[in-house]
Image 1: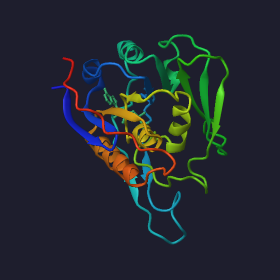
Image 2: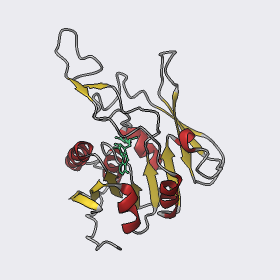
Image 3: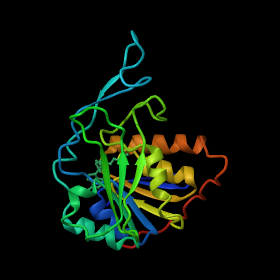
Image 4: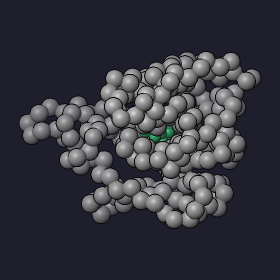
Length: 238
Ligand SMILES: C[S@@+](CC[C@H](N)C(=O)[O-])C[C@H]1O[C@@H](n2cnc3c(N)ncnc32)[C@H](O)[C@@H]1O
């Protein structure tokens, strides 16, 4: 069984399943924008809900333990081969963890997290197959005062603003694949920018959260951008 469950919300297609089985059945996309497991056990830890990190003074804050187990190992080389053959262009977050597998390439993206804790990393890198060799930087403090999302549902959840910035590098890509969808940030950005995203997620709880976030995005459209048309239902290739 490849596809366990599938939802179509707005212009997005969300699939609960293992991308190693599902990806070969989907055909080609205009771009892959994804954030695979890094293999460094980033699945551990807790998330804090409410308004800002720790909430307002004296307020009870909701502390959630993230669902773990998915970051024990990075994907095998064959999975990256499948990703590369799914589309002509690619943006892969956590790129430094896969630099020995992915082709040597010039254009890297850097997310500067405005980190002030000396023991934390300054940001994150994305490998891309885009032409050019300039490193491009996005500066965004995802937990700062001006951050749009105050609570995370996933330990490696990317800001929607970061994924919207990424999609700006593939302006003509109408169909986007994220085979490691997590909490659905790539698809939220696709919905907001009028693109058709397809996301695959193995964990039923993260799949549920992704559906919820995409649904919310359909109800908060960017008034300057036409929402994406619903994707046609297509019979699986296999
Ligand atoms: C680094 S996280 C992605 C986080 C995402 N960028 C977000 O903003 O929420 C990688 C996700 O891939 C999922 N995953 C791991 N192996 C998978 C597989 N074989 N097929 C589909 N999803 C998988 C994990 O459950 C995890 O949620």
